[in-house]
Every structure is written in structure tokens, then in C-alpha cells.
Length: 102
Image 1 (tube, rainbow, N blue to C red):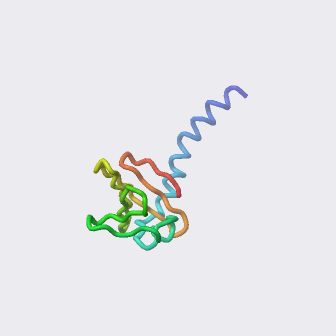
Image 2: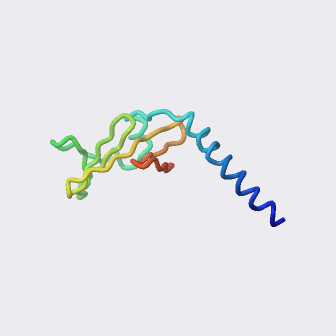
Image 3: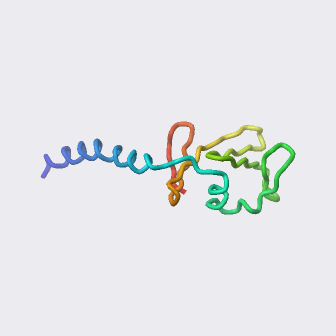
């Protein structure tokens, strides 16, 4: 039993990244319309002169384009994520390559 645990851990270390790749291999860049439909609250955003959209009372600005969502913070710092989909599942991919389903 004790010998099977390291072997299983090694097997999973090899197989799981491949499974994640298989899942994301069918992903494509999500278009703006898909992103807006999938993200809650986008209908409440109002465009500003700076090209970002804002919610009433919120100082963070949002820019949604094909394959990307960017946030402009009050400090003028921006942060963007790429958005991929297979038509059902959506993933945000950060600068470091981290993926989050939403």
C-alpha cells in the first residue's frame, strides 16, 4: 500500500496537466458579446469619456473587448485578463497563465 501512493502521485503528476491541456485545447477567444452575456452586471455599466465603463457608485472602470476584460482602478493602475471559452465554460487567464473558471 505504501509503495502505491508515490506511484499514484507520480502518475497523476504526469496525467493531470495533460488533462487540463485537453480541456483548454478546445478553448477559443471569447468575443465581447459572449463575455457580456456571461458576466453578471454588465448591463448596468455606463461608458465614460475615457473608454472605460462604470457602475454607479463604483470607481473601478471596466473595458470589455474580444478576448479580454480590463479593470482600471482609481489609482490609475490597470489589470487585464484574457477570456477563453468552448461555448459553455469560460476561463479567465491572468498574466502569469493562471486560469480561473467563471
